[in-house]
Amino acid sequence: MDPKITRRDLGLVAAGVLSIGSAGFVKIAAAAASDGDWLDTIKAQHEELDRLLAAVKSAGSHPEQVAAFKKFSIYLAAHSLAEEVTVYPALAISGSEAASKQLYGEQDDAKVLVARIDDALSMNHAAEVPAMLDKLGNALHAHVAEEENQDFPTLKAKESSTMNAKLTSDFKMAFHRAAS
Ligand SMILES: [Fe+2]
Image 1: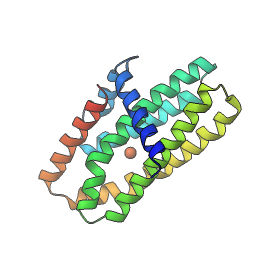
Image 2: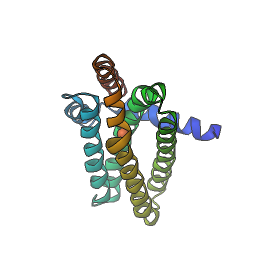
Image 3: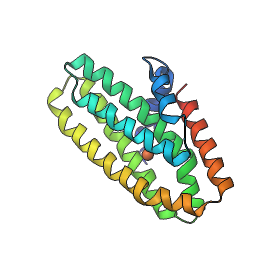
Image 4: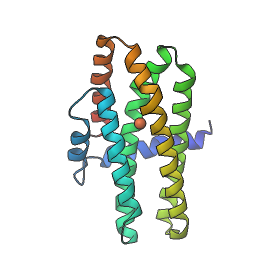
């Protein structure tokens, strides 16, 4: 992987972690992660991501769009990190290594696209933003469909109740750490 991209991604996550407690985000995060098992929690977070991305698209001014995108990208960073340190490793360990690698790769691509949109917003290149937001939305929907319709239900069915309980606890803890 390009080391510049890696540093950029880490910087984005770090920036998100530093500012994630502001603007009511913790409240949103808690609402999305409070009840249910790991799969229910992830599905609720996917819905929240959809809502936050729609708010970016419908923002009425440049400053509003910048603020909405910041909120979306911070939430996405916390959600992605939690999946990458809990569920994706569990997929690989349980024998679905190819699916795990594919999901990691898709999230890496999404992080770079998020950085491109962040750059365009910073430079006030408004004309470039809508197409990139559509591309990101389509990529996220395809990624979420793989997770919710195939990979994650398969994992949940394969794991014992003890391991599913561990995944629930580990996922929620990872998300809350990234979101506090
Ligand atoms: Fe996800």
